[in-house]
Length: 329
Image (tube, rainbow, N blue to C red; front, side):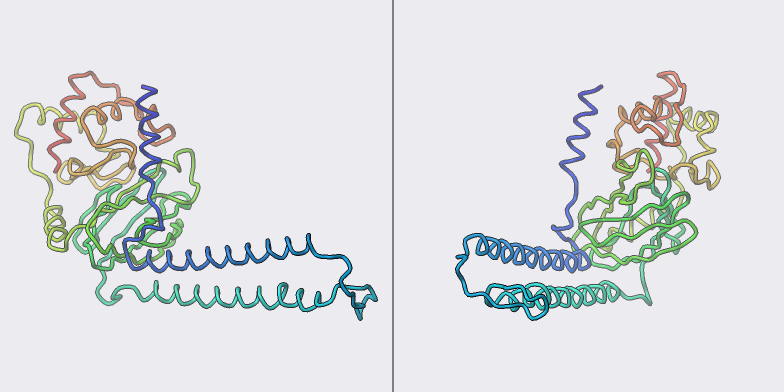
């Protein structure tokens, strides 16, 4: 068990996304600003180190000038050095950065067509993500599908504490504040899977509050959205039918929504099309039968502090429940 957990930690570190590998116009603008700031900082650092070295090796018999304010003697040219290095240079660098930041902010605000946006509503919970497509009436969890090459307007908020929504390869981050709705526009230039995370400390599992953004060609996205409008088909196999009955009998319906089976609740992620998702536990594990069994029986052993309690089921009941969940495509 320990080796398995260690492998997950190593994989988690290896898969961390970088904002310096931008895959969208918003991320590209931010990465460009970062590189300008980096090279300016390097130039200032080198200049300071050169001046420090010169001051160390400087001859002490240089002509001195009297300071007109204090009467103390200073090495010739020191006043100009202090004026240039202490006033003119910092002011010029600060003004340049201010202009670049204002320009970058304007570019981010101009992204997309506000008159016809694809709106995705995301609500942060401890420690998972509720995702809704209000125009289509579709709901999912911990996984966001978007069309590649099209701007998407995210309306984000929180149901409990302050969270922060960030997809490093697609753009900047934005706070999710209870009682308020903030807006962020992002775009993925190419199809791909992009990892997102919470960047505002929100509790014991803050570091494991992940989600993924799946960008697909527009026609594939439209097909995906159309398929999610209708509830999943009724299970036909006996084991899956038994699992559906268990889903209701084991009180799963009080925390998780499945269209046509349980009401719209938000104590846990919507499971209507659970089988099509790539991960479980907000990015903790791949969505595979063995991992799902481990999560159902004792989620606290995998993600301590999450709101799902252990579920005391027999091996046969777990297999039936998994068979039902795998029909929710």
